[in-house]
Every structure is written in C-alpha cells, then in structure tokens.
Image 1 (tube, rainbow, N blue to C red):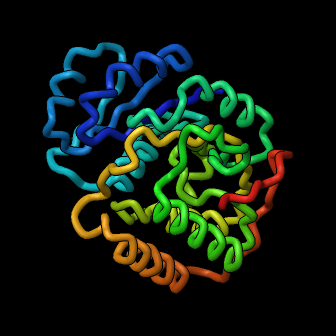
Image 2 (cartoon, rainbow, N blue to C red):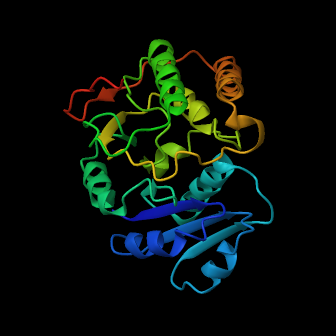
Length: 250
C-alpha cells in the first residue's frame, strides 16, 4: 500500500520541525501544505529536505489545504492519504495504526476519534469546542446515520480512489461537514479509530469572527444546510465499528 502523510500548516514555526521529524519516522512520503504562513514557517520549511510541499501565496483556509492535499494524492497515484495537524494535537506515532486499519481494506474513511477512550485527566478541550463538536456530531448522526463520535478530528486516513467521488469546495473549517454529507451520499464505508485527546493551546484562534462560539456554530449550520440541499438523495453509509464503545463526553 502506497500512502502519503499530509500536514496542513499555517503559522506553525514553533512546532513544525518537531512534528515533521516525528512523522518522518513513519512515512517516507510527506506533503506539507503551507497556507500562507507569515511567522517564519516558510523559512523553516526551506531548510527541510525530502518532503513534498505546496505553498499558498496567502491564507486560503484549512479546508482548502486539505482539498489541495487530496488533489496531490490523486495526481500522484497514492492508495491512501493520512492527514494530521501540525499543532502537536495529533501523535505521529499513531500513523502505523491508521496504516494497519487501511490495510484491512474494509473502509474508505478512517476517522480519528478523541472520544473513544477515557480522557487521561490532564487535558480537557475548551467547553465551547466540545459542546459544538458534540452538537454537530449528533446532528450529522441524526441526519446521515453516520454513527460517528467526533465530527472534527483532523487525524484521518482516506482511500484516494474514494476521494475521486467527492467534489469538495469549502475552504474553511467547515469543510468536514461537506465531506461527511458527500461521503454519506456516495455510500462510503466509515470507521473510527481512537486517538488521544490533546489540547496544548486551549486559546488557539479560529481567526476573526469564528472565535465567537455562536458565530462558529451558525457557520457550521450554514455549510451543512447548503450541502444537504445539493445533489442526490442520501444513501445510508456502511458503518464498521472500531470495537470500542463511545464513552460519555461530558
């Protein structure tokens, strides 16, 4: 199985060298999508050899970075693409778990879930983020019958051939909502894999108005409603449990 690890980056000068050093232990093929960084990240990346790199001349959004990474994987003929963030909330040491899950060949999307294992007591997500995640996750499950526990975890593995069926256009943080709707519409097989919940910076900004929880939630609703109004009748996706019961997230 030929797989690519893609890391979307925006102003991650503090962590980018460490994260990429750890990722390199588990993957020979690494793609960095620099989304218009202005904090010295670009200069750091200039000094790192052996990685693929896409650079946005300005900030275009987290969703656009993932969309561009998917396109790269399609063009280069990879079998799978694994995505993780660069803020040290995702552990590169879990990459082999995603590879092993992909090699079972019974899923098209393997989505990390931070709510399939008990919290270790040292870290809790900001209350507004957890509440919004749970609200959107519950809504997606009710509408799409997904059976997921974590709608917004960026640590995922995607079968590249299945990505060809999707037409993703949302450039911002709501892109996963568009992805879930289209995945359900296309009948993609979805599994979750437990990952550790880590929040090193509970005050990390979403940017501009989205730092306000109500504004962010309305933005998510808007994208979801728009995507649900498009396309064909939804087909129930095939759900395969990771074998670990979801725990109370409160």
